[in-house]
Amino acid sequence: MRMPIPHFIIKNRFQKRLDLYQNILTEDILTDVCRRITGRAEFTVAFDNTGYNKGRLAILEYQGNTSYISFSETENTGRNSSFQSFPSALVSYHRAGNLNKEIYFYFLPSEGNNETPYFIFMYRLMKTAGTILLNEDQYLENDITPFNSVSDLIAQRDLNRGRNRGNSSTYVTVDEDDTVQIFGKTYGASKYETTLLCLAIYEVNSKVELYEIGEGGLRELPELAREVIVSLGIRVITSDLVIERDQEEFENNDSLRSPTYIYNLLEKLGEKKCSLCDCEVPQIIQGAHIWPVASIKRLRDINQDAKLQSALDGNNGLWLCNNHHKLFDIDYLYINEEGVIKYKSTIPRGYEEYICGLTVKRQIPGNIMTANFLQYLEKRNIRLNENDYSLVR
Ligand SMILES: [Zn+2]
Image (cartoon, rainbow, N blue to C red):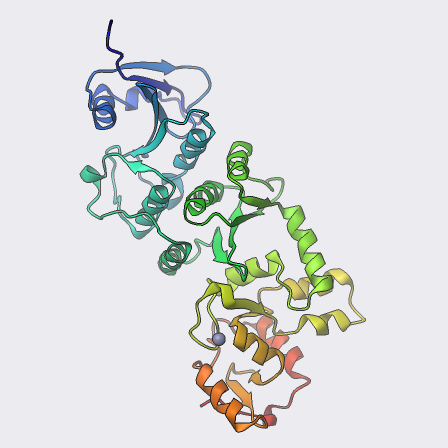
């Protein structure tokens, strides 16, 4: 009886160009892939000319095991294009019914730097999602480790964003119930990143919610990706449901934990971090309204939509920790129009020491104090007298 040999199945056609995969995945490349996965150098290959290749994917069958291998771009043209294919490969891998399977990523020779901070972040996400980087020994100098917690991932992403302001396509945060919330765009290149984030984060925390942030007609992730995400038990909340929740929250709850408000604050302020102290623990940080929801609701001269808009505006808020949120809500703390933080002078001395000790910041940063923010601040402060407050010391 002949020994079975490894067998590749590769969709040959590209979706958007005329080239064929058989021209890119040469004998040498496939031999290297085969040797690294199976330890054997001989193989057979079938290039399939039906349909097109999603995920720059080759499938290798050997001894009942199926390997999904996604290949890197050969033209390394920047952050958005370079990782568009991999999430599709990961989705195909998840959808495959067989249990004996692995997902791999293989570097093809390319121009440019493979190890920008963004690329390294993506490799770490891929590893977190269970991917083996098949020839990283040959292409990467950095040691790539998977994320071991969501806070690790958020911190790294925040650092990365600092260098590349404007990459604010998706957000990851944790709510007060310790549920990971992913605000993911469902269109353009961002939809691939949203998919990868979901599949990676699920591996380190099983309580995950995905809020789909749509645009125009594209309100949901591509069907196959969505199916996989839902099948893992991730709660997917579509744009319509987000709007319903916003309205429900607005009507029933003055502290408004609506998804749109959280998303707008993430867009304006970045990751959760108390504006009055150094607290960065997302489970005890909330969006705090400058112009309070209760005051907005009491207005008589504007309609419900306009009220909701003010309540959801990212300019109408700060991230505050639980303590600071409460102290701000009961007007023990005051922010004047220069952003200077003050405390109420008439409170008992014991409170004063505690509050001043807790409040390590002296001023709200200038970039937060936009014209809209100042309008909300004025509406808040109209009921208060600055002379009742002293500088935090
Ligand atoms: Zn605080």
